[in-house]
Image 1 (cartoon, rainbow, N blue to C red):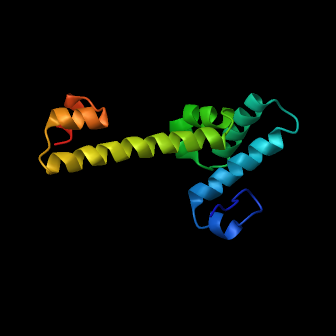
Image 2: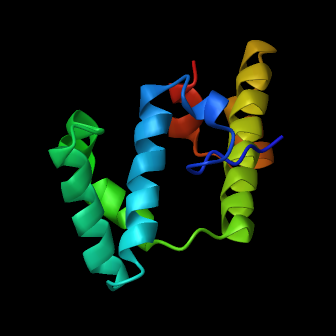
Length: 125
């Protein structure tokens, strides 16, 4: 289930977490700024405003560049889904290799089946 926690939506959920509430404020500020500013300027101004109002100060000061990159990157569900599927596939291969090692199968056989390198397999021990 997905909840919309943008400002004015599901406030009971967002208010349970200062971080979520701060994120709401940041995004609301970006959206407000977009009425009169280009995206880059709107994001920078929103970050500055939040820091001045003591909202997400530590996070924004420590991770400002990551926040900027995240907000500049257009979210694409198809790309995200593809990344999640790839991560799950890789995790499944690693878990399979671990199980094969526990069963005493030969590293060369595990390598051939999983396509992991011998070093990767041996590092799983």
